[in-house]
Image (cartoon, helix red, strand yellow):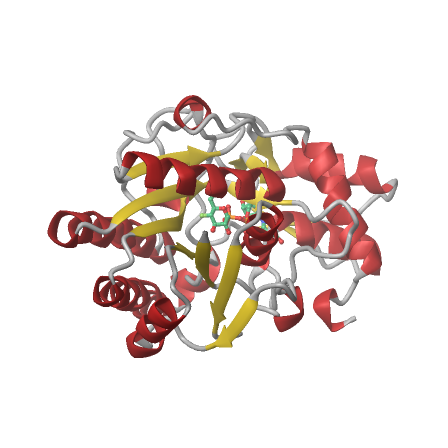
Amino acid sequence: MRILVVGGAGYIGSNAVRGLINQGNEVVVLDALYTGHRKAVDPQAKFYQGDIENKFLVSQILRNEHIDAVMHFAAYSLVPESVKKPLKYYDNNVSGMIALLEAMKDAGVNYLVFSSSAATYGIPKQLPITEDSPTEPINPYGETKLMMEKIMHWADQADGIKSIALRYFNVAGASSDGKTGEDHAPETHLIPNILKSAVSGDGKLTIFGNDYDTKDGTNVRDYVEISDLVDAHILALKHLMTTNKSDIFNLGTAHGYSNLEILQAACEVTGIDIPYTMGPRRGGDPDSLVADSTKARTILKWQPQHENVQEVIASAWKWHQTCPNGYDD
Ligand code: UFG
């Protein structure tokens, strides 16, 4: 198949590109390189630099490259940034989805796999979270992802564009050779920030809040390993093209780790006593997010291979040691 990966130079998108190529697909990447890295894109993929909101460009690529299906990873994705700059998130995420669907309609491409988020749920009433739990986001990022899912739903009703939204929980880890991993500027995610502190010894790590309603007062998250996440995308695409039916799936492990438990696991993996400061809460963080991904395991036959969080941290640690400055090395 010929797949267009929009946002294929980012952390998750670039790993999806490699996974798709490894399974024999032809991949075309469109990325504006606002946050992604050209070096992260597999050289076997054809690369276009451009913005998802440029629907004429997207439509042209879809036609000229004879694309069968699209994977969309081109949304802004930082919860704290979205709280500070909500308009940036509504503008890029929502307008980007509209432009992509318009281009797909124009070019007659009818299959889309979308990188959605557990942030669509807000503060869950019960754990683990199933796909039919209420969706009441508490930050602009989650709100935009929910709006994007709703736009997809109505584009299916009106235009027959079939889509699967994958609601990720917390994605982490790097490739087993330590050559590709997470490189955000600024970095806001917990595991990379812990490991950067371990490498630099700068003592700048802050844990945001210990007064949440959780086992030790720090937030609880469900960490899904990057290659497992990519496998789910490929299974979702096959399922979508076989059933011709839109759907939504959670991707997580059902194991919740508090921020302090992750820090402790990182100290064990690295053998370093990583210093930290306990800071105030960060805006937009729900107490706990833990996935029930029975639906993906049953329907997509998704079988995550890396559910041990120490193993996930170990792969990220290899990346941070090999490339402490990310793709700039
Ligand atoms: N945290 C710290 N210190 C840091 C960084 C993070 O204490 O330096 C805390 C956060 O406050 C939060 C937890 O670590 O309690 C996880 O934060 P991340 O920034 O790593 O991840 P988020 O849970 O905010 O968001 C991630 C993705 C979203 C996705 C969400 C779903 O970035 O795209 O998981 O669970 F929607």
